[in-house]
Image (cartoon, rainbow, N blue to C red; front, side, top):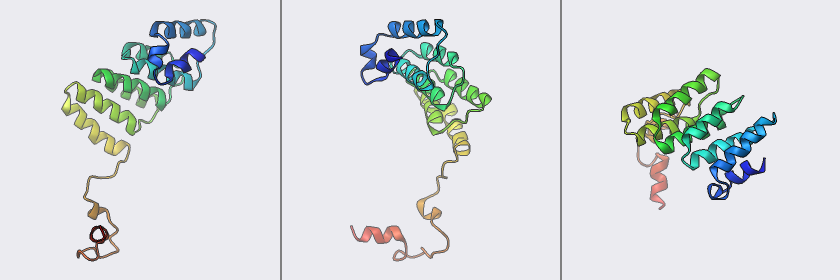
Length: 166
């Protein structure tokens, strides 16, 4: 559907008014047709960029088989508007639906919590993210180096050698 694709282009929020976009989607659905997965992602993303979080969440609810891109578009809308409770609810919904949240999912929820001043929740999500997404630990770089080599002296450490050539 061209109106959805137009809305997703850079500056799309100025090209296609929100009411016209939602009206066109409603007319399409009334005929029994559905948007493609890509068009649904573009629609939810476009609504989020416009600050229309409620509309983005409504459209997420209209998608029959949500994937991580659909959820991330809605989470981004929540993060832009500081709707941390909705973002956490979407994250829980993702897990119930069997969709594995990725780093982008967690980042959006953490941003939503941060913009709402919910530091404790943001730190809890960061902790959860390190386990769920399997991010590397926060150990110093030297601690992650292979143990088979001797990096005990400045001359044998690869980072020290790189710095001497600068």
